[in-house]
Image (cartoon, rainbow, N blue to C red; front, side, top):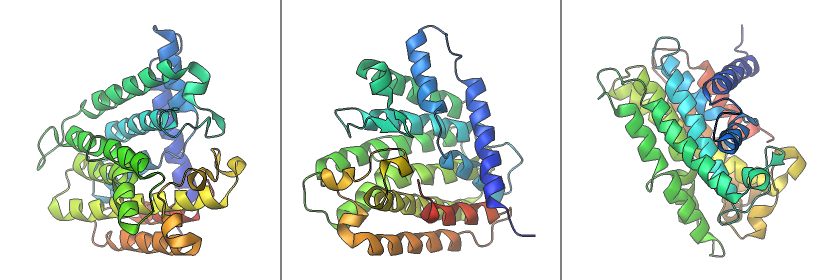
Length: 295
């Protein structure tokens, strides 16, 4: 019987959505506008890929069911905060996200900044709620999240992305920006899942390679979608990368070249899964979904 990847993804996504709905401060909790903005940002849709990768990597590493629940949900909060801030007028200045008005459009810029700040803090609270098991140090999970989020991760990548606008795109700049801005959080998702499962060095190394390659492929696929789709198809502005002369894989390699590079990265990600003690079909499916998605 073949693996039903759509059912798997749907089941995990629905579980993540339900947990986020329950665990976030309820609508009407003072300060009301702040909590409403947080819920709007997090519960307004999304593929939940980072959370699902975290859960699937814990399973592939032989972890007990649910062992990576906290880290997986923390990833969604952190990702949500980055999207709020990325959309701000001082950053990418986008008005639509997932087919809806962005947080600063709906609630104002001050509320958007503060909602992002609060979600980042809450992400670390959830990540720190459980100690990592041996052979890892107790703080290993929250350390992974901090490293992926900071100046050598997502924030650093955003700085480089903004600085590269209007500059001549290069393969080196694309690789550097993609690795920090996007791949580091996918890498973190894979590593947090493996650490939560108590994975040893060899298993952790394989899943690290998987996460980084999948993250790079995801960003290239995003670049391709921005260049080749409509806003209605992807739920956010299309063609904006070219308009702002952003440094993207498409700008450097062209559409066909970018697609080929994404396919090569998916192959490398799948190759890194050999010899794992748990099920790897979900991770195979996620990797191939990365380059076949239409939004």
